[in-house]
Length: 438
Image (cartoon, rainbow, N blue to C red):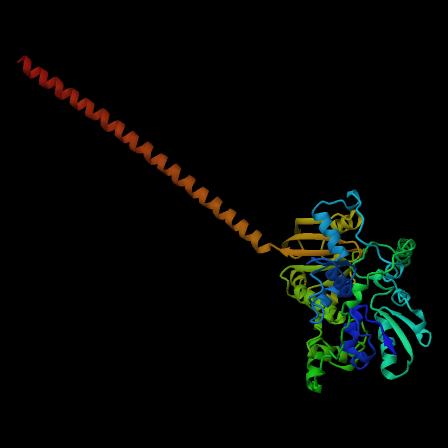
C-alpha cells in the first residue's frame, strides 16, 4: 500500500484527518522541494521562486522539514497581477532559452495520472492496483476505504484538485479541464530530455509524515445545545442538515464551532434568518410608513408607522388596493414606466395629513416600495410661523403709521408755535425801533 506525496494539500489532509494511514505515504518531498534542492546544488546561492497554480505550496514552504528549500512562492494569479501592475507584456519579451528543459515524464506531471506515469521503472507497479484519486471527494472516499481496510495492495496517486494541478485554484483562464490537459500534452510531446547529472542523487529527498490531527474536544450536550440555539436552531426540526456549510449535520457544525474550527456565519440558514430578522426589525421600527404594493396596486406589506398614518391595522387592509388611502395615479406611473418618484409632497385629505412620498420600483418582484414620511406637524409649524410673521408685519405697519401720524401732528404744532413766535418777535422789534426814534 502506497500513497503518493507530490500534492502538499493531500499530505496535510491525510496527516490531519486520516493520521492512521500516514504510514502508507511515500517518504519523499514534493517535486517543488526536490527541484529546488537540485537548483541549490547546481547553482551558487540562488534565489529560488516557485510559480504555479497551487495555494498549498505556500504552506509547504513553511514546513520545518523543507523551509530551507524555497525562498518564495507565487501563484499564476499573483504573477499575472504583478505583470499587469508593472505594465509588462509577457508576449512582447524577447524569447530566451531556459538553462534546461524538462523531460516528458516531468512535463506530464500536472494532470491526474501524470505522477505515476513519470516513474522510470514501471515494472515495480505490476503487482499493485493503480488508483488515481483527484478532487477532495474522491480523495476522502479513497482514504476512508484505506483506513477501514477495504482497499489493499494499491498505489494511490492523490491530487486534491480535480484533474490534477491543471485544475489548481489559481489557474483561472476560463478554460475547461480537458482543454488544459490537451495544452499540457501538446507542450510535452516534443520533450526528449532525460536526467543525466548523477550529482543530484547525492541530494536527500526524504521527508517524514506524521499525525497532525487536532485532538477532539468533548463538549457537553448543554454546550452543543447553546451553540445550536445561537444559530437559531432550537429544536430538531430547525436542524436542516443541508451540508451547505461543509459539515454533514448541524451537530457536527456545532462541534466544529466549539473546537474553534468554524463560525456560526458559515451556516446559510443562520445568515439568511439573521438578515431577515434585521430587515424586519428595521422595517418594524422605522418612523417612516413603509408599504409594499404589487403590480395590481394591492397592499402586500404595511408597517406600524403606516398603520399610524392611516389609522388602521395591516390585517384589515392586506390585499386591498392602495386607492383606499391614496390617489393611485403615481403608483400606476411607476409600474408602467419603472421610473421612481422621489420626495413628492402629497396631501391626504381624508386623514388631514401631509406626507412626502417615495415610490421605488423593485424590478425582480415587480412591486413598488412605498416610503411615506408624515410631515403634517412640520407643515403646520410652517403655517403657524407664516401666520406669526404676517401678524408681526401687520403690527409693525400699524406702529409705523402711528409714528408717522404723531410726527406730522408734532410738525404741525411746531409750525403754528413758530409762526406765533415770529409775529411776537416782529412786534417786539418794531416797538424797539419805535423807542429809538423818540
